[in-house]
Image (tube, rainbow, N blue to C red):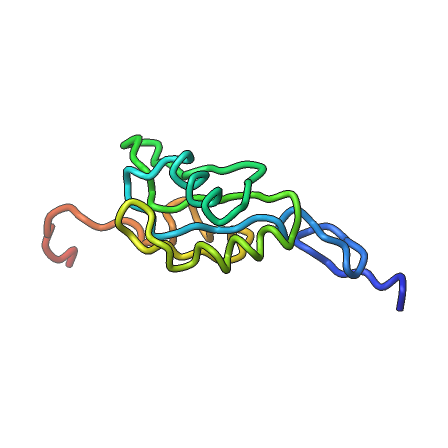
Amino acid sequence: MENECLIAWGYQRRKGEVVEEDKKVYIGNLAYEVAEGDIASALEEAGLTAKSISVIMDRQTGRSKGFGFAEFETKEAAEKAIESLNGKEIKGRAVKVNKAQKMQPRSDKFGGRGGGGGGYDRGSRY
């Protein structure tokens, strides 16, 4: 089964091949004031260097959404980051670190909330 292929998020890869998603970690429960530099410092304390770090910001408020991602050169470095940082405090909050997962598609533009509503009672039609 040397040529066995696996489907990985819409494209094929050979069994055992490391893809970019294997090198990316999710970092959650961040304080709103945490920046990329704070995450980089925490990683450096653990002896790690990330290829890229991003804290996700809210478009409307410009404030952090409380989570981010770090990408590493190797899958092993990503796994070490998970072991080293999960539960570690950054700016007073214990962060949650795990392997990043592809974002699930949304069912509609409104994030699954019910539509319509509002207005006043117009009484019975009949």
